[in-house]
View 1 (cartoon, rainbow, N blue to C red):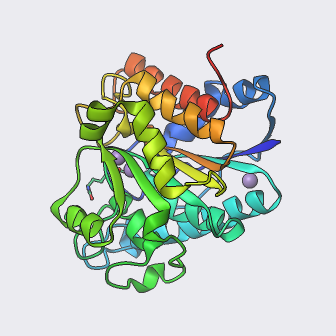
View 2 (cartoon, helix red, strand yellow):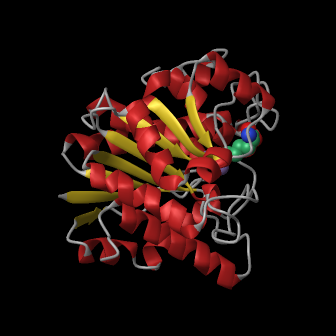
Length: 301
Ligand SMILES: N[C@@H](CCCCC(O)O)C(=O)O
Ligand SMILES: [Mn+2]
Ligand SMILES: [Mn+2]
Ligand SMILES: [Mn+2]
């Protein structure tokens, strides 16, 4: 089986510098070799070069920041991920900020229209053009994929390919008011850190899978934002929130998803190696690599 590494050095979905350096650090930490060690055929075409749209040519649309840049890059990513998926490869997208998931999940759903999404994150990333406060599009990809909220012409290429019952969240602990309304209104299943504490990660993953993939027959797209982990575990990320998943809880999710045999696409997002001292940056990059390995078959015994 081939895993196709898609390096996406992109930071336009948010304001902090450095998250575009995530992919190069993950690859330089040896991720391709580590996956080959696990028995994967690894295809890595090099990091994608997204030419910048200068900010003066990409003024906000309403509250949305860098809209043209985000749209163009996500459209390119959708094409690349879709191509790899159509070749029967498993696309592993390395971010870069989480707005990229508009592209990766569009790509996956083109090949696997009935795929379900497991979204591991401290945040719901489901703000619409109306509900967003920050205007940072990395807080919005899920709303575009569901086709909810006011239409934004720039993003008309994003088809509403995701259905509310086909996404489930694990790790939420920083959800905006508007997002809470949307989750309720659309009946979207979310296991926050409260449920992780209450039931334990094993039960939570089982319930999450039972919700989106009851017969374990549907392909799974796992979109992992490293800020789902506690900041002591993954410190070097743009929107850290205390009270997150332990190292083991994060890895358990990946191991359990791999065990289903349904994984068809994986995103490792929001690693920003320039946000902390080099030790913490290295630690965060190493966690990104180990999460990917766990989701791709690395076991402890
Ligand atoms: N909900 C906040 C924070 C979003 C964090 C994005 C990350 O999860 O990709 C916002 O909309 O700005
Ligand atoms: Mn490629
Ligand atoms: Mn996210
Ligand atoms: Mn997040």
